Image (tube, rainbow, N blue to C red; front, top):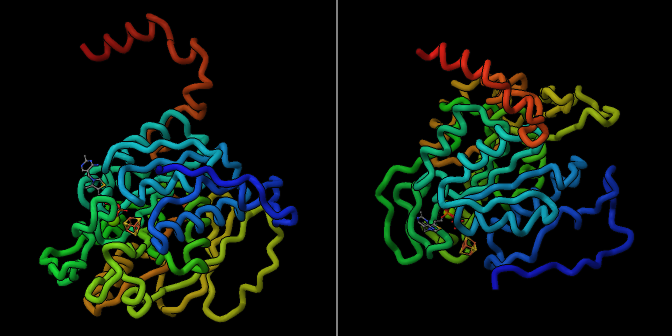
Length: 351
Ligand SMILES: Cc1ncc(C[n+]2csc(CCOP(=O)(O)OP(=O)(O)O)c2C)c(N)n1
Ligand code: SF4
Ligand SMILES: [Mg+2]
């Protein structure tokens, strides 16, 4: 059985958000993933972020490919739109849906196999086009669903559960997203809710391609000694560049900005990203520096986490294409079909 409905009962005094929803209203079916799978922690972080941002669940569209990671949208946002597509093809389906209706909030959920192996081309084009979305890769370094083969994000020298050593260079999706022009780029760890939840909130408030690479240990096939995506390894090698608070424009701002090394970034919707810097000289607005920092730290065996780059004034695919503001399903017949004179004019321009 791959789908178990959750009982509707919940504690009557559960906290409600501005829409009158409790956290439970943002959940989905009971997870059938392995107990302890990092992907379940990411689902919980998505639930918390959407609840805290007071997002109406019916305005969210969650899309995925194939894999344990791509199964997770069943386990959160049960009242949202959902589309479980083909392995590696989520980005093109999301792009199409986004072009047809820009009013929804698009959340793409994928795996490292789904995005860095079979779907690498799709991933790349969604990033470079600036599709307005939150794109999360639940990165465990293996194909979990098909029993633990190395994926393209597996580090050179990493050992599989059976002792096989990976000889291939890994693909760093964060580096690729930076190079390809994504305008919000972050990495986190499924076991670090205090870092991950605000990163998801910031990505949801961002206009443009927002990418989060989330290291998510596979307890069944990639959590042993010799793995570089295990809980122990990531805890020991995690180098956080900053921590984030997201303050929505709807709230009165009462935070004291004078504390230590703090940077405030205003996003297009008025929300504020408040960055508490750990690496004092780290600049979230410098794409080139972010790439170089990432590579230098990788050479030292460190996994850089936090918000690595943001362009708060980013545009998105709709502004590049100058598309209509109205979703297609709200256009009238006259608007959709401008008549034979317009068609004649178009045909004449092509002769
Ligand atoms: C076109 C196609 N090729 C191969 C497969 C087999 N397959 C299913 S899931 C998967 C890999 C999943 O790995 P990942 O995306 O990392 O997700 P995880 O299970 O690790 O979360 C593969 C190769 C498939 N379903 N469809
Ligand atoms: S096989 Fe791995 S990725 Fe899949 S549910 Fe189990 S722990 Fe998670
Ligand atoms: Mg995987």
